[in-house]
Image (tube, rainbow, N blue to C red; front, side):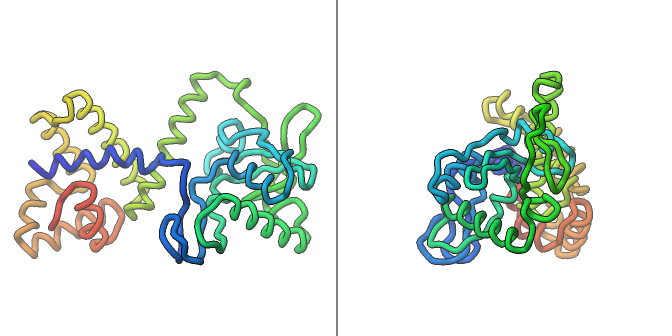
Length: 287
């Protein structure tokens, strides 16, 4: 079926889920780097860029990254964000910072820029200090001061988490596997957000996208009859509805209502999101 050719869209989810570097987002004002004054954030800022921006805001060149997020123990703990450790020259202390936190910081400006992130971070930090929280936010959920212990590891003052580099203490193959698993769950979380579906559905989408990507690369960009048959079965497993039912729903209003209800319940979303976004964008199906 022609609709199956649209399944190649799933391969694009990898680019969507793993995008990094470059511009920022707008929350009010112009979208993506416009010149209107409003609220912005920098959803792709890197640890190194954040540190460079702190140096610019503080007028120093001594703040630096000590451990990147792929080197910190806390980042590998289930349910935790991606944490990196810096030496903060302004306060002559070490700090652990959540990468997701700095990417979510909202500031007022005419465009999205990393320097504004660092400036707003300092404003937030100043507010915490004025409130008596000298070591970061109260629980260390966003950022916190860490102590470098004599045995060579960093320990959070508020959270108690350890941040030392664990690469040398683990088998390289195990680290690679853990990194792959974390990347998979990160992609799934982003796809879940973009398409407003359950995390289970988004994981199935990522898996199916990987399968399609392999099929297309093996067959020079064309799906074979066997591939189409296999994917038809995969679609039914993912949505709970067969392609024949989708076809009937496109010409029968009662069948359409029934199909939308079934699929919405299966993938964990609303019927309107299903009809207006998920089905047409992911599978090329318009009811």
